[in-house]
Amino acid sequence: MSPTLVEVSRRAGVSTATVSRVINKSALVTEATRAKVMKAIRELNYHPSRAARMLARQSTETIGVVFPDIQGGFFAEVLHGIDLEVTDTRYHLITAFAHGTQDESSLVEGFLYERSVDGLILMNLALPEEFLKTISTRDMRVVLIDRPAPGFPSVCIDNGTGVVSALAHLTETRGYSRIGFVQGPIGTYDAEERWSACKAFARDKGLILNDSWILNGDFSEGAAFAAIDQLILSGGELPEAFFCLNDHMAFGVMEACRKHGVSIPGDLAVVGFDDGYTARLLRLTTVHVPLHEMGRLAASEAMKGKDEDAAHHVLQTELVIRDSCGSN
Image 1 (cartoon, rainbow, N blue to C red):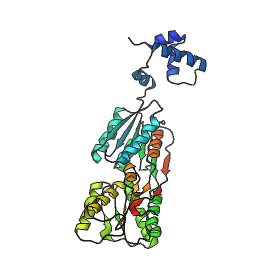
Image 2: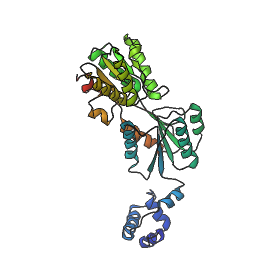
Image 3: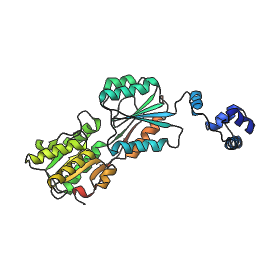
Image 4: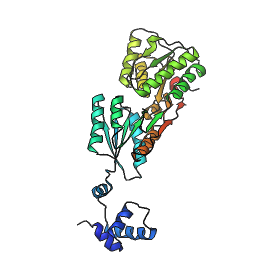
């Protein structure tokens, strides 16, 4: 039979309330008393009931995380950062992956209305503004990754600076003037931010945007592969370089080029955005995003109280030059 809190208190010669304070790491307990209680816990091999602690605290000791899908290393690396941040705390994680806009809303509503978590992290979800306004009134701290919104703590990246560093390298360092682009999904915050920065750079530098080299993508490898495959099969002229607005689309471009014998970077330079693990393996030149730091900051914000200030974090990016557009 498992030992009880009462038995620990008797062994340590203190009240059950004092034992609870020690277990919950209260600052109200002296070091001598804490040592005495911990000694009794070890001797009895006592394990506190998580359910009882949650009931006493009116807390689930859990953070919820909702991502749009499970594909790709991008989300995995952010999730790893979240996990690193909560490792040394009492919190646990519940992770859910949505399949489409309606599923995103349903998952978020489930977490909010069932009160199954203490805080909620939402990453890159296409939630309508009205829906966000509605959930902002709920008594739960909700943190947004990759999308700032009034009333919510958020963690975003400086997309504009990242785009400028990549395009400046292609045009000024490498000397390319014929550049193609693979866009992200319309309506996605990061995709829109990055494409706006591309157009602004082209306008400021007098760079001509050729419509036949502006390809639609959905941040997936398959969409980019299909777009480049079709461009090559149609006999269309290739640009000198393609700037893809995330790494997975850059992988699709690289795969299509391998299929058709297009040399990278000899015939075509390729640049991505994000710098996940696979980008490093494939030696892709890309804009580095501090993915672990995004996760850690989001987790830190999610573990704060609902009424604490809604901080807005903007993380800086850095161009990482590898083999896919030349080494200099």
